[in-house]
Length: 202
Image (tube, rainbow, N blue to C red; front, side, top):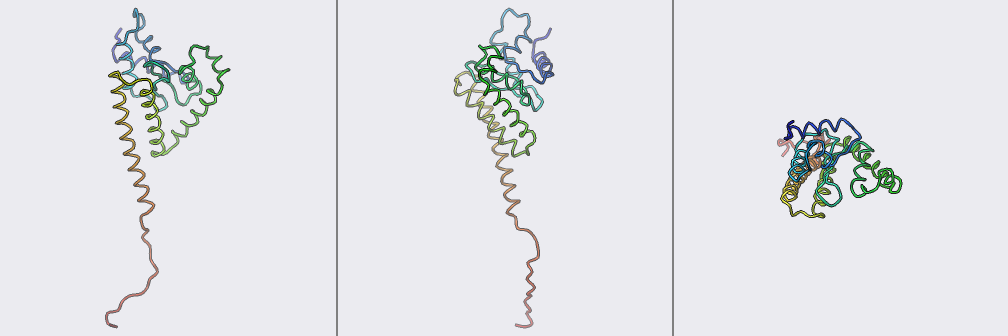
C-alpha cells in the first residue's frame, strides 16, 4: 500500500467524515503508517506537511497544540466535542477525558464559547472574517515562539504565517479604505440654489 502524500490525504479525508473527531499528528501517523515498527521523525514531518497543504472544508482546522513538542491537531471548529478534545489534548491528556471534563469544566464552557465564536465567523462578512483569521494566525505564531522556533520547520512555518498575516492585513486595509470612501463620498443632489448670473445685467 502506498504511504506517500496521496495516502496521507486519503486518511485525512476519511477522518473528517466524523464531525466530532479530533486527531493529533501522532494519531494520523498511526493510521497512515500502520504496521511500521515505529513512527519516525520523517513520518511526522510528512503528515504535518500533508495537514498544512490539504484543502479542508472551512470548518476543519489544523492547529499546533498548546504543549511542548511539535504536535498538531486536526479538529472541527463547529463541534463542541471536537473543541473539548482539543482542550483536553492541550495539556490534560494525562487524565481521563471524563475526569478532565468534570474537574476542569471551565474548559468545557470555553469550548462552547469557541464554537459560538466560529459560528459568528462563518456568518460574518469578509472584513469580519479577516479579523478573526489574523487573530488565529497571530496566536499560532505566538505559540511556536513560546515553545521555541529554532527548527527549520518552525522557522519556515513562522515565515509562511507572517506572509499570510501581511496579506490579510493588506486586504483588511483595502476594505476599510473602500468603506471609508463610500461613507465620505459627497452625494450628488440638487443644492436648491436657483441663482443664475445674468451677464446682460452687468
